[in-house]
Length: 354
Image (cartoon, rainbow, N blue to C red; front, top):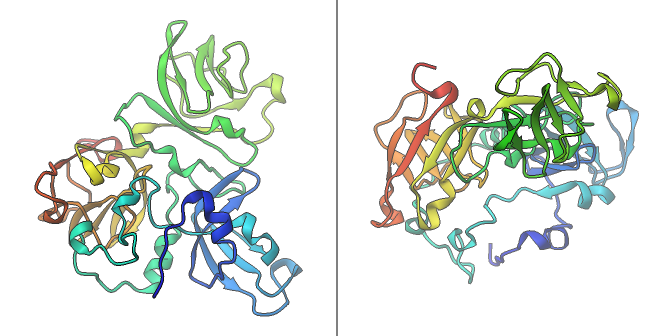
């Protein structure tokens, strides 16, 4: 612990490529079929010598077995492929490097700067279990034979409810996946677009295309002609090969992004945005937004700008219910007297009367 330095994301490949992995390490795993990095990987075994592993494959010493995709997938990665397929898990958001636990000279910034309480003992087993549920539990079910969407589909700007989340298994065009916002109308129905330019639109019936072009489409629901996109029964367009192969899953964003936080300023602004459930902590659901901020329960409900349950910037110190409460959450004294309360809105399955 004598030396410390900052490593920007652009330098990860060079600076971290010789990382020695150990069982229990949290890692990001590259899924070639999807062209995506999944951030819920966990190293479960490292070979100390050449061995024959699952399925009779011969693997060299130093090979790493990882589980990922909410624990639904696993694979062995040989040493010469680790640079391309494994990354040590980072625990901070790329936004706000001025708000980290170490100062530029490597000294600790102290609990006051981070809104920390006194650290609590956390078992290795609990940390390993938490790593396995970092993907959004409603969607990210693995790269093989199940539904997957980019982890950052929950955005950090706005709280628009008229939106949809599209997820899909390997074989779905990557540009199809993501969050679709309403961008206007086509004919007499709303049209939605994601960040890649893919669209959901209605032209005689509801359709989906991987680019902003209403004269072609990849997927459709022929029986759906209603006012809003359907959330089931999507099929591949017959002109694109019929119903064989994987099809996307469409879900109302409000059913996944069940919390919306607003009002935080300064270094705490990363807590603003929409949150989806990513697992459990202390027998309560844990939620995360696209910036990596979390809502979690530890004696009471709290919010932290980074994925760290030993610190918090906002809380409701008498809230001990099974779900986070709506309303204003008090700023922790250590984030400064100028920080206004964070406003938490619940919706979807968490909304009263849902």
